Length: 181
Length: 299
Image (spheres, chains in turn yellow, blue):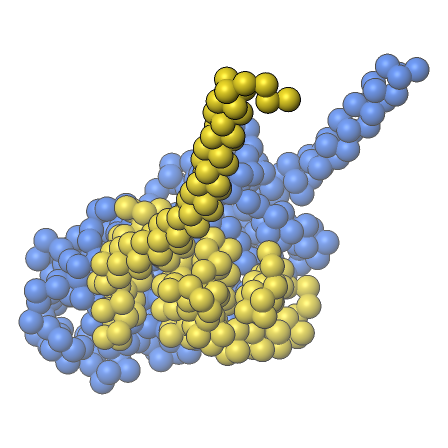
């Protein structure tokens, strides 16, 4: 089979090429494993940075509202939200803060509707793991407001306004329990 | 055969869609709308709503602009069967003429409700209602629940008699009275104003004022806003259809007026309608009693 030195030389070169290819393939496999872990890490970092930026933005943008709210100037805080709504119309956090303030004003119907609107736009508000989590607020609105609205609806079963509010309350209740949209 | 089935399906769909709007019939039923600023504005705002109601309820309705001060007299004279007015007029008509509650208009943060506020400029030294002694104040029109009644009641409740303790108070003339009241304080002509919270909201939303321009000295309880009512002898089935048509309105509902297709709620400056209960109006009744205003006024 191996008749002369030339054949031996050819065989050696072939084995050397195969070994080189093996080394290359093994290296590429290890590299691709490394890069997929890196992609996942980058994705997590991006998500974390985006959350941090969002939280920082919300804190900065809505600080005048939360300060007024915390000082008990509730109506003034609502007016400030109107003003901020001009820059960011339809922002879920505007609806969330409106719901919070309306709840403090004892306006359960409006608070439930506003909070349901906020959660429909951004489910993070009922996600325990999210930095935007406001389950405490949503729970308070559901616990205080929903029984009152249910009682009113029981007394006036044909009232479409009350049934819409109770629907919003049930939606929030289901999201708190971990239900999907 | 397939072509015949297609044509039949299209005809059926057209018939079903057409059935959504009833054929308008009979003599017109008049709806009295309280003027906020002028007859012209009332017609412009409410003609699309009236046209929509005619189309959906299947009855020819007519828009009748009515001055606030004439509203009760014209209602009593039978000039209109349905009325759209502020919530104090609703109570007056309910008390004196047994008006039926149909639906309440939604506008602003509190939906079908609003409140009255006493405002001062942010840089004003006035901190409490008592500090208003000897100051100049501007109120909205006398029959305005959130532009006069609520603030007058807040002052009486704080032991402050506006008639004796203010240096002077005024009510602006002409249209856009509530905006004039707010601008009266903004430009320093008055020390304080009786401002409807809804107007503060709308002017802030429109960028006419900033939330930081004013301080709220006191704010009333939250009370129902403008209200649709029906005469007590109106066919209950018609009232139910009228209410349903109002409740079915969405931001996308349109109607054709003078060859133009308009959004009904946008044209009327309304967000929608809610079904309140007559008992929801009790806080206004209590205010009117305390302030000695109609329908409970005693001389």
